[in-house]
Length: 494
Image (cartoon, rainbow, N blue to C red; front, top):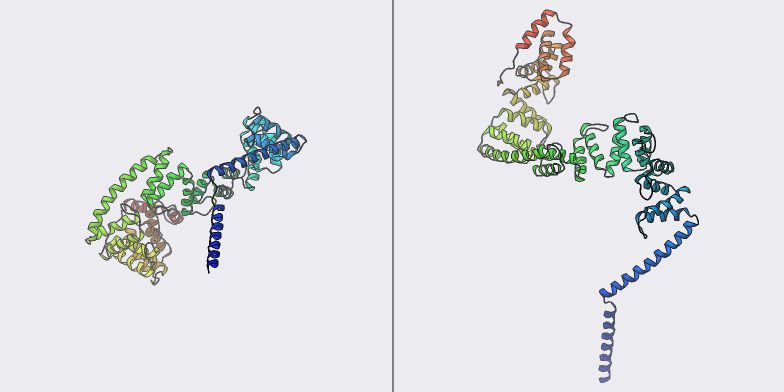
């Protein structure tokens, strides 16, 4: 038993010894050891670089084009050797003479900048042209700049855009932007707004801030692309984030007004502040006005809300307008619809019309044509001319469950027309022109078309002028006196 016990103890001691040895082997290296390893690696890399440079010099002097270019590049940027533009130019010259497009381009840059060699636009242009002809996109872009400015070559806008486009099609972002500008203005090439947008978009996708701003403006105005305010806002955001001052200012406007962006006064103020810091005209004034506006409307909104919650119909309607515009409260179409509905149910005529439009468009509330029509009808009966015009349209077209009836359409159009609704005046004129629901009368058609023109719609004038030749001079004289003295009536409920 004693022997077995000792044997077990010996085994345990041996295991402990082995464990301790294993733990010792896994211990991480000390700081001194790590520093020694790094120094060893540095010396090894330094030796390899020396050997590499010796080898490169040997084969470069023997005429190896790639080695000549590599040595030129190293001296150009100080990679493993001291930066030395003169030596860089000498090695580039040798490689360029053998047809290296990269060496031709880099040597052209040195002549372009006057680094290591005397500045020589003509020599730079020659080298850019050689490299460009071999497909170097950077050389193609730079050559385009030379032709654009007439540096080292005769100025030629057509050649400039040709080289810009070649580089652009290879993905050069600056060339894409330059080509876009040419197509946008029609300088050196036939104007093509759609193609300009295409190149602006390519450059914008690669992060060119000015191109992103141009894309935003294209979406804003529908220039070369389908108009899309939300896309415009998105691209303004991209440009603004990169520090584009005008984009920052316009983005501030969007957040202030809630136009194609969720209204947010804090973000509006932030972008105005950034634009103002870059000297954008009006940004600082708009920032001050926004802060004053917010403070004033917040106080007003609180007062209106207090009255609205007590059941005051006018205040309920006003709360709807405040939420719709985001004045004193955060813009919210859903809350606007809720307050319009409260006002409408309290008998507020304008509230009836606005909740009808909300149901009609599904703005802040689930769309419901039947409910929209019901509230339009109620508002129309309360004398709201815009609602009367809608009811007239329903009868004229047979929409929203209304039976088509030109006589009823004419009656509703006339109610709206006498209150000054230009659309109703025009449509009433059409009914008189065609004798639909009323006795045909060119005189009445001429009268209502003329009155409708006060709204500034040119098409109404075209309609009026189309029948002028069918009236006598006496009739037109009488009509002019009638038109000059006509004034809209005060709203009246039915």
